[in-house]
Image 1 (tube, rainbow, N blue to C red):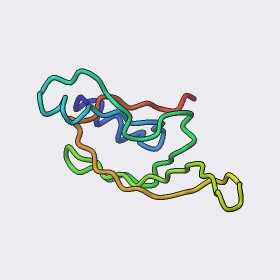
Image 2 (spheres, rainbow, N blue to C red):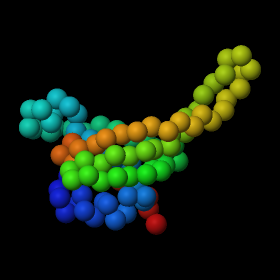
Image 3 (cartoon, rainbow, N blue to C red):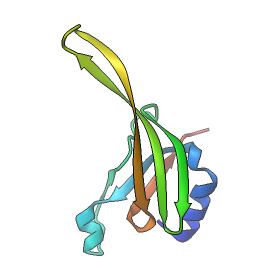
Length: 101
């Protein structure tokens, strides 16, 4: 991620739909070939950024993740909500997707 986009992202962090990162092997070799999602990106409804703290070239994110769970005891499906912490480095982020207005 470029420094300019990094600065722009800080201004609209809560409009983030998904974050894509380079694979660890790609970054280590200095030749990123593809990216993979680090946070949920389908539909944008499965995660919400609760807080973001930018520290130089790193960002600490607290994300609320909602997943669908099947309870075999009751044969029912329900939503499950968990908070996750991520620390991402600017150089490892390949792209950020935003919600459409």
